[in-house]
Amino acid sequence: MALIRQVYRAILFLLFLLQCFFTAAVLSVLDKITGNYHDRSGWAKRYLGWFCQLAGLRVHVTGTPSKEPCLIISNHISWTDIPVLGSLIPVYFLSKAEVRSWPLIGALAEQAGTFFVQRGDGKSALVREEIEARLNKKKNVLVFPEGTTSGGESVLRFHSKLIGAASNAEVAIQPITLYYQNANGGRCVETPFVGNDEFLTHLKKIFAKPYVQVRVHFHPLYQLAKDADINLATAELHQQIEKQLYNTCTLATNARPRYAERTV
Image 1: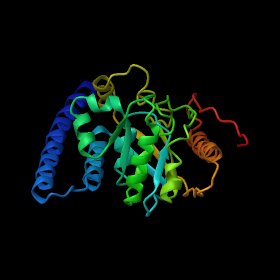
Image 2: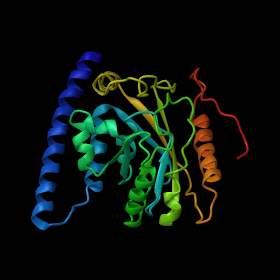
Image 3: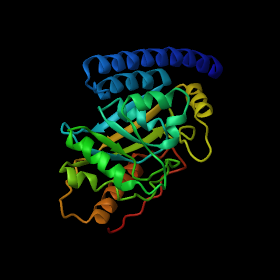
């Protein structure tokens, strides 16, 4: 059954990609004809929702997404975080530079307005300015402050440099907690995209599963004052997300995230 499921979803995925490229081509032509850039975030939201359906990602939401543009931060487990969150809210993504070279996906990510960052290249100030520019245009921007993916058992240390963009743009921050579950409620070990995982190999693993439950919790908005201590705010946001991750875990799993209450 797993092989049949993989083949069926692979066919749907190829048709999905064709439709994506057709839409991207049409929008590019419209950009040239009108001389104006047509916002892709609404289209991306629609298509990412379709991808979640064909891939068997069943998304369960708690909390309330902000109705106002904001800086969105989340723990980071897999590349699937992007279609999951992008299917719920129109948002621009900040992604690692390697994604741009992924077959087909990189081109679509670029068309959707994703901006790519080379890890450790010392350009965090420029990236922050780009985030602020998007926020000032009343667009949602999603940042993964861990800077890399984890196994989903805990939340890695947050980097504070990009979080300060919300203060300069005078917008709130909405923290989100993500957790992937199997049908029995335990942590889905196939979902994390870590280490030397390859995209196509990982995609096959996802397509082979009957379905994956994705728990998405929208935390209340976090207001960041102009003169706020960014390091302190980052620690508080980390604690919110980490605590929710712990609370989301069920007793069915033997791999409960590690969480310890602490002062910040």
